Length: 469
Image: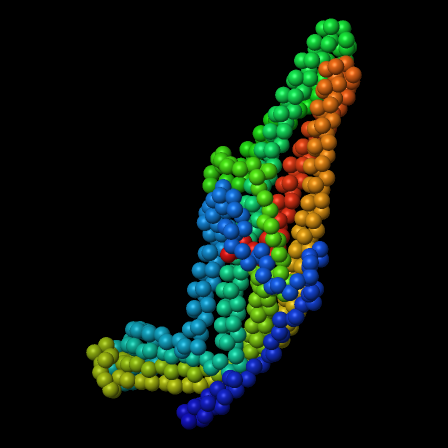
């Protein structure tokens, strides 16, 4: 017994030793500033702003709030956090000895030709049955010599933190998806209004051309072309109505609601971008994005797996104890102290035949750790690229919007002039139809550019780690 205790004490001294060395999170190569962003040392960015402050439209806020609460992906993420938290709490008990209570009563009839049967006959007990009654408490404990349990705790805690980052990531995606869907809905509202206005204008032009046809001033070809222009504009109306209904359904489902009409209190032109789209510095963005944090935690998990698999290759110290009452007669079962018994044992288990399998598992864990490092670097690289892409989109779409507004104004003047000249017989119908068609096209394009610009701002907010606050 003393030898067992001495051995246990010696091995416990080794428990402070780590059998594997963790790989530290690599320091990614980051630029001083994002591409297309002004040089700055300010670490604050729009990613620090709460989504209700960043998106000021009340209808959009309501949709986002509903999506965060009711969206099933979010609810599943919350359940994953709860399950991970329970597992983490359970791992803490791995250091506690396992204690089991066992109560048993056995009766066996040995063969007359067996040693037990012959013994019963020689002892003249008067029965051919062997009865055993036992109640005992057994204890088993494995010393965490090589840090296996500590690695399991680190793994469970990292998994728990990963589920939290996964929830944040889902929320950022939801905020971006809802805002972009809402902007698309406002764009469709603007485009259907443009189409309806064009229908009215084309109908007015068609009536004038019909009067000229009746007066013999134009041919039937002019009437047919004017009618085709009107039909082309009219065809757009049901298309936009369909797209509006589909977008409303998609937003409702994303918000965890049954498909329904979404009441809008604003228009596309009334939505304005934040005056200050500060990005901060890349290192601050990395610490804010949930996917980067999750990739970093994946390396912690990989380190823990290496430690667990490495520790499995080393000897395991187990101490067991068993004690209770035992008797061959039920009447003497709890006759204390004569029925008391106790056993204490210590063992050191060293894997032999399965050592090759354990070594392979350890090698695989090391490879997975190397993969985790690469995946972390790739995630950081993608994060920087997302911000740069969004900045480029915002800059170039803003330039496109300026030109598109000028084009719409020019074509509106051209249409007004063409109509006036046409009524005074100084321009033909083709000039009027062409001018009206160009206005329709340019106005639809302007609405698309405005939508794309707002979506790019939402992308920038998401890429900077905004949306989960």
